[in-house]
Each structure stands twice: as structure tokens, then as C-alpha cells.
Amino acid sequence: MSSTSDPWNLGFRVPLPVRGDLGIGIIGAGFIVCDCHLPAYRDAGLRVVGLTSRTTAVAREVAGLRGVPKVARSVEALLDDPAVELVDVAVPPREQGGIIDRILAHPRRVRGILAQKPLAMSLVEARRIVSTCAAAGIVLQVNQNMRYDPSVRALRTLIDRGILGESVLATIDMRAVPHWMSWAEGLGSLTTFLMSIHHIDTFRFWLGEPKYVMASTRPDPRTKFAHDDGINLYIFEYENGARASSWDDVWNGPSCEGAASELAVRWRFDGTSGTALGTVGWPAWPRREPSTIAYSSGADLGAWHRPHWPDTWFPDAFAGPMIGLINAVETGATPDIGGLDNLRTIALCEAVRTAAREHRVVDFPREYPAEAFEATPAT
Image 1 (cartoon, rainbow, N blue to C red):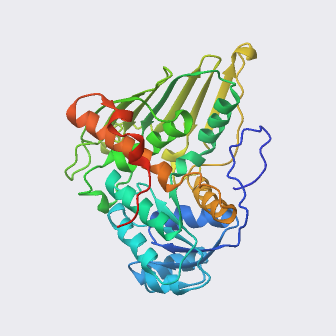
Image 2: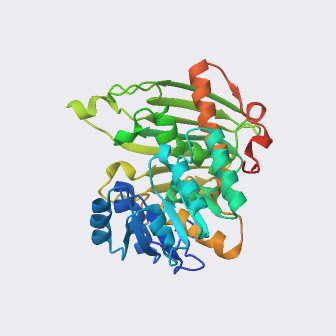
């Protein structure tokens, strides 16, 4: 659904790329590639030239279903293809760093890499990935695709224009049941790095970095494998007085065990001059349910503006980070969700984990000083 059409002038649509013909090679052929990346890239007019996966038969099945012209038997075979200029790495978090190392070690250099979120399961490993990509001269973008949800982007536009005044309170209330993949077991974090990371990054997109982090978490009663961060509650305090809070409930009560279900992701933003309310349509997946926004400012005399659109988070928003990578590669600009920027999202995930585990307030700038987010020479 990528388009320049935006009759409400809220900047919610995924922008068109500087070029749509750069060849994209994809590593991975799971659900997220088959049902999100490939449909979104196709609708945005992007050119996928090849695909590889650990299981060649699965790669062939996905390629046939989505019209990908070539299937490579290995990462190296995919990189051998001169048509592959950008690589979309879509593998589980524990495998991502190693795959990126193989891309950087290949004699033929690609121009850019799109890594999935989480970039890594720790700030130390994320920083290593960022540094090695920088040393190799390869642009690194991170697929924090919730930034391209239409309601999330529309709110950012309202904030930037000052329509809602100074930021006071932003909240996200998620009541939904993710489908945890088998690779989630044993990662060391469940909800924080795999689900809350979307909301943590969205708060950064809206408000920047907080000064203090508070959190509480408990296991999800439904998930059988060992974990501690299932249902997450966290609060961010900002230097300017703003507050942000998210209730990330991946259980949603015994709704899968026979009780009534009410799935939703709702957000609200209050400023000194106005209020915005929104929803993210993801819990309805695989049914397409557009995200929504309603907003009113002090000048509206109590009226609500309710723009609407057909665009959704899944799968439409998945084109955005790849287009951001294309534009950075072509123009030499800093990627909009680049590796260096994403280090702060990883650090905030760590801070949430620490605050919950140690039952204390994390002083974010003191415990994660500016030098923690600088690229270091690869060793």
C-alpha cells in the first residue's frame, strides 16, 4: 500500500524509494518473510532477486508462492550473485550476528544490510555488529517496523508540528497473544526483546530517550518454557517532565482456554494543547485491520479529527525500513533506523530488564552514557 497519497497531510504513508530497482537478497524464509516482507516489498515496487534459507525446500516453496526468481543453496551462493546489492537478514536473534559476519567476510561487498529486531540480545553484541558493519563500509538498517505503522507515524507528525503542545503523557496498552516461535526458548528474554521492543522503540520515536526507567514483570501463565519477562509493565520518565508507560500483556487472560477474548493494542498521547488516541490493527492478523487515530487540539472546540486509511502495520509497514535503507545507500544520508540509533533501543530493553529484575529505578543516561552508543573499531 505504499503511496504518496496522503489527503490528511499527516505523513503516515511509507515513502517511495529513491530507487526501487536495487536488487534485494533475503536470508530466511519463515512466516515473517513469506507473509510480511515479500508482500510489502512487492506492493512497494521493490525488487527481490533471490532467497536462501537453511532448508532449501522451504525457500523454494516461498519463492514460488511470492514470485522470487532465484533460490540459492547457501548464504555465500546468494552473495555471489552480482544482482544482490542489499541483504535482508531475517533469521532468529541468536543467528543474526553470525550471518552478518558471513556477509562481511564474503569477497563481494553488498551495499547495505537490513537486520531484524532485536539487532542482538545484548548491547555488547549489538555494538559489535554495528562496529563491524561500519568498519566494512556497509550501511546497516534495523527493521523496527512499528515506526512505520500509519498511526505511529501520524502521531509523530502531530508532535513535530506542535499541534498537541508540549508532551505530557504517552501510554500503550497491549492486550494480545503473540505466536512465540520455538527459537524464543532460551534466549534470556521473552517479551522485552521480542514484543516490548516495538513499544520501547516507538516511545523513542515519539519522545526520545528517558532519564529514568522503572519496570515490573512476571511470567506469562500460558508459555510453558522457562522465562521471567512475560507480562511487562514499565514507565519512562523524561527530563522535560513527560512520562511514557506501556502495559504489555501477552497473556490476555485465559482467552485461549475458553474465556471471552478482547484483543487490542491501544495508545494515547496527551500534550498541553491536545490529545490523540489510536489503535494498532495487528492483533486481527491475518485479517487486515487498519490502524487508527483520532485527535483534537484546544483550537477544535471539542471536535475530533478522525482520518482513515487502508494501510496496516502487518504487512504494509515492513516496506518502510527497507526503503529507508535504499534511500540511505543511494543518498549517503544516515539511515532513519540505523544501527547506531538502534543501540539506544537495545539499551532501553536492557534497562527495563534490569529495573524489573533488581526492583529499582535505572538512571538511563548515567548507566548508559553517550560513549556506549558510539561505534568502536572492529577487532
